[in-house]
Length: 494
Picture (cartoon, rainbow, N blue to C red):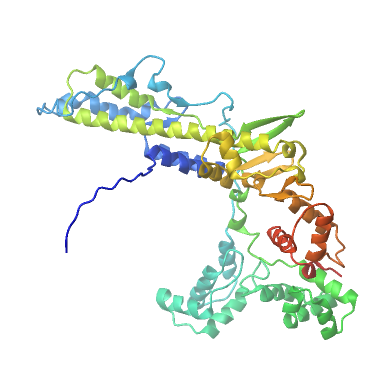
């Protein structure tokens, strides 16, 4: 075996910590930016909200400087760290670090005197646990019931096998329960509110809800038979087969359909934690049509008021004025400089985030001007990430980060930015149109169709081609699926 040396030249691209921090901040939506800033404030005492009255937070650290001569004797390490240049941090000129703030006059300051109401909610599982108290259970049954409730998903279904629940009880509770014993308690819980809870599948969920309606009409009884014997046929809308099997008239099957579509397929979906305010979209941008002139503003939550701590600057000034500087003081000054630099980097990253967001959204708004003026999706132009990247001078990956996680509010609704991106399709006249336009027309055709005789993909293809869109049937099927529209057979109504 022989050893050899070789010289290789490689070109590597590495991101600085500041660039990485900016990339991460770009991905943070407005709804979570406040939380991210709070984390930074907790980690870095040199960064503080742009409000008065925070200097007192640093009294303890100041005392360390004031008393350093009494607590420590000179140990000969005065020059160990060399001269530390802190001139830029203690300057009284225009670039005073105390004025290194993040504030923009375009964004009005928030009124902190306003009290934001918060809903006090009881979680879905807490609601179920509270109902357990209404059952006459012994200690063993209570633990089994609690284990079952804990196994129920947020949408209200019990998807965990009874054998798995039995194993959990054995390992965690030291209870040797049989599947039959667990099933009995499951049936108790299935009587809880909301109706349909603890079902193992959709069929059982709907049947549990119909059982609550027993005795409220013949259509309820028929609906139970349909779900019990013809569930698969019902989901596929094979109504003729159901009518033949149960000898039902058209009127009967209509009543059955009306009964079933009123049921809740996700009994836990509207209760407790699953409907928290955090599920609401908070727009990052606002676009206003001011008599034909589009005006873009950034959500004020994206422009927080941050600054470098006055207390930290004062400590550096005290150090600068002093004549005796020992090792401990210099270590503390280096620490303070590090924290101030980190705070400046963070403020710069937030500023760059604002600039990148506005630049990207302004370009999208200009590119899709007709849509923002009219709200008509057929006015959307073909637009890909590269189009915006070239116009803004940003990298495609940066535009992608902004488009994937940000929302804009218009007078026509709130849209995710990636909504405005689409590929192009060439019409018979040679004109390039957005695939979004084709999807909108496809959606309109289906919406206007006769539900007794819905349009097949072949017919939809013909209608689009008649309008000049050169499109294949498989492409129509793909667009229909992307719009979450079922096939013609499943759109049929009696």
